Length: 179
Image: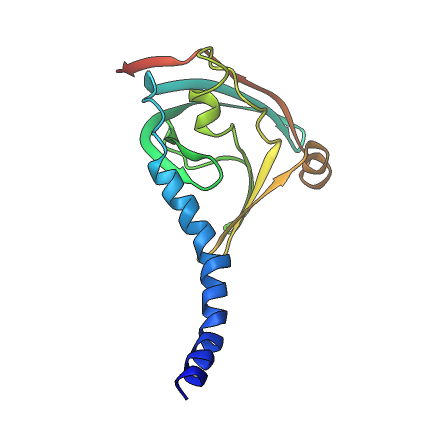
């Protein structure tokens, strides 16, 4: 009777053990590996302002936006894709949340995304070149609860909204705070 009870217990626990072994254990090992990984050295530059000029045509009108993208070091982050990495905060000097090219409604607009702060602060070496070109534009939608962003290619941007990005130029950074 004891042997039957043990066998039934093993059979009952087998699915739980399989879930642990195949679903939880790999993520646990990855998390432990990332936690034990050494942190990247602190960046030499922890703050910079990148003045930029965006020229675009919207419905036949030539428009220019001048602002500065401010990037600040925000510590070390961790994820399973890259391990430990430098986190950055970015915002615009003018106080705007997004660069709006066209406001369609209260819940939808077309924005220009200059690029992530990592591409500015940790570009190729220390010469502040962007790692990749920014998107042509981003469509932003919200219903008050959820936010949705989607990339729009230049051709679609012009065909659907009559917007054409003419030039995006980033000046040399203004360096005011270093370690």
